Length: 439
Image 1 (cartoon, helix red, strand yellow):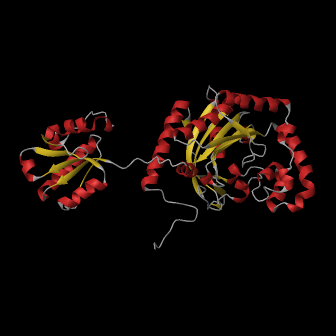
Image 2: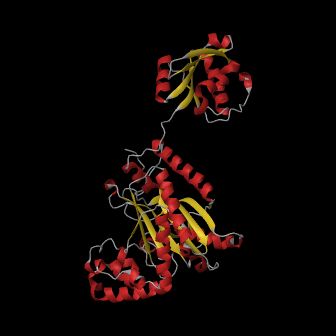
Image 3: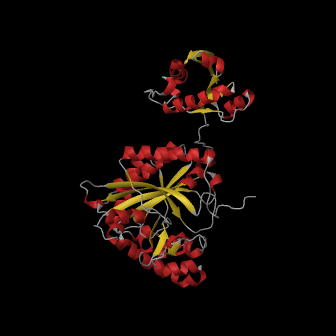
């Protein structure tokens, strides 16, 4: 057993799994470019007040943050989510002075939460998030939800359900909170200690309680939709209409409030309905926030975004039997037939790499049989046989593994033959580099 192990709730990512991460990250960059989003990278830790603002009732802020004092006696916290740091940067760097709204940003960042580790729920998790800042409109809400759906469906996920709700504007929410407090007051002493805290801070949070989810007072709680003013009702109805007109089937979930206090109007989650996902079924989720930018000292701009945990996404992909990792393949393996060929194999492999081919050779002068075992393990497509007899004639032998075809070519024909055999498999643009004796 190793003397050292990763901390609880963290993991190493390597081998086949890291190749799946590469596929996800590549699709993120491709889609964000198509949708016109700029990347933003914020620090892994911020001043604690960036996250803990006012009387926040969420578990993320109250129970899960990693907070510490630095040597200057300043309170700092590792980022538990991506939105707050992005808004802090947006305001601090006056990005709102750019001419055209909306402002669209994305990030891929580690986030840190001290919570009980579960499948797809780690203490360090990596979040892909988008934020759109500007004037409030249900069309942007629909586009953000549709963007997330398109992304996960492009990866292959199909067993999904779209949950949406509205928290209404400030007037609607204030009326609803008053009604909730009246409703929960007689049974407050029977609710968990967290719910008793939430009662004073934000009674909406009680609806999201995992401990008391089946408590009669929660099951029979008033519905927020009954307290919406006309503006909030119309906004939500427009959103539902736009989504349905674009082919997105949605389910209105009255108890969906999401995990952070700054949300207003639209909140949403896209969840997996695959039975293997268990309780951690949310693939991504988010919502709109009307006052976050101004809370940080910026202008009166609304925003909407989502966060998607990559670890959770991989669990959902695995549940549907989707493997994003390509088999690791090698274009060329240089097999040396004698010791004299080792120098040549070294130079030829580097020359091939300069020209965009994945090339390897045997560093350790293993036997001919052992080298061909390496060819098999590495899924090499082509073998180049190098020996002193061929080298004395300025030639090499190329063997195509798939067809067992074998040809002898001169040194200056190697690239041409590789291009011929690998053609579209070779992603290089064939603007070959030249150097050394292989010109």
